[in-house]
Amino acid sequence: MICFAAGLMLSTAIAAADKPSDPQIAHIAYTAGDLDIKAAHLALEKSKSETVRAFANDMVRDHTAVNDKALALVKKLNVTPEDNDTSKALVTQANEKKAELSKLSGAAFDKAYVENEVAYHKTVNDALKTTLIPSSSNAELKALLETGLKIFEGHLQHAEMLATGKH
Image (cartoon, rainbow, N blue to C red; front, side):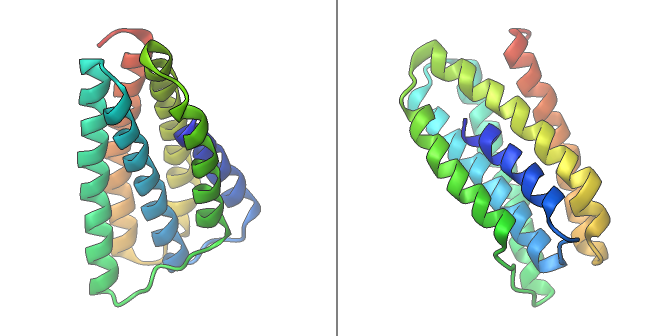
């Protein structure tokens, strides 16, 4: 629920907003990655499934790596990521949904976590393709977002395989 709700909020908030600035894009992208890291940590706490835990470890590793590159880039460019309505809404919704997901256990948790990862990556990948990458005016930020998109498309495929039991 964490990722799904945040993804829906991301899609809705971006669609309603004017073209985001590079500092806002940096903050949205970092926040989206951070929320997926937190969801993965919850999966690592609650899941007993080796495949779900392996997937969650991949999410932590990959999103941390992309977020570390994002932090290095904003430092290099001397840009301060700008909190905005989209990133604030993501955090609020994720906190609410974390409480719901935390109540699940066993196979019910695993199923909900994986389904949410599918929905989240679909939404975030779409936001990257249609709004964040096209709105970015800085070539290095745009390149980082494009690299992230390639990684996150792989996450989507992996999550879809887990959801269908074809892992």
